[in-house]
Length: 184
Image (cartoon, rainbow, N blue to C red):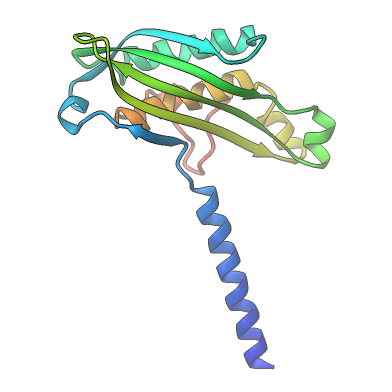
């Protein structure tokens, strides 16, 4: 009996650790990172955004441009200005409040971020950001209510912390419990 209990506890611990590890996957993939010597002085210059969707969401475009400009003025203010090309491949909003409340849902924003050398006009660095938020219940419905703003903040924050390795401004910082601040 005691042996079976130990096996059950061990199995539960392994499952919990596996789920926790899966949840901790970094949203930024380095396809071709900036060299450490360039990273120290890298800044964000002109920002271009393209969408690989038939009809880009105008609210997403406004939010993303605003958050990327904030990132450029703060954590992206290094002296060596790279042109930043952002290509959005996916924007998914939650289905509806009823689905989110009872079943659960997710919102997602994914795209490529390239830093273009101002001297050569070549790609100096290449990254892929995949921001995903999942929630359920009444609080989850509220968390997923403004996906354009929530995901734009997270995407820009990832450029600061995941690409430039700098502290994002307070508007783009995560709460201590790991959730992005969507109340501002």
